[in-house]
Image (cartoon, rainbow, N blue to C red; front, side, top):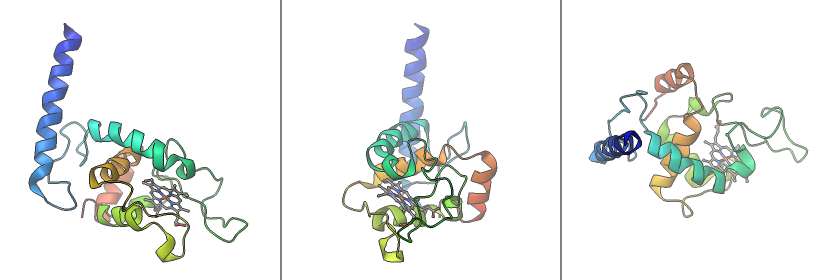
Length: 153
Ligand code: HEC
């Protein structure tokens, strides 16, 4: 019984939240914030992002976006930079949402990097979910710093 009502409530919150994102403010984000966390994404985006990330990103960035190389600032044998952690320990938080989306769309190749672009492979919702997934590892302090750097702009 309790489980049922909790699920029902979660559903209502999810629907409300999804609607609040439909206003078209910024790249598909809206001006809604999750009432619990004060972040731009909600738990259902994190859940969707977990799968998107596992299928498309974890190979290079690690399952928990922790990075797979000891030092992301140290060039690899071929002269390229390793995929950095996206969990808040490197500098993904320097980039506002629009730039994070651009990196995912175009990859790093136009900037002389190694990451492939996902413009055709993923839809907007999946890309945003992947970002929500790795941002969910960020501390409130890192998230606040990101907002200072432009945040959802
Ligand atoms: C083939 C390996 C590879 C895959 C797969 C990959 N990346 Fe990357 N990613 C990189 C590398 C390497 C960089 C560093 C820039 C470069 O060399 O292109 C990077 C950089 C980034 C950055 C910029 C981080 C920063 O600190 O500036 C973001 C954000 C990012 N990746 C997100 C993703 C997401 C989300 C996915 C899945 C949809 C993904 N990447 C898939 C290799 C990869």
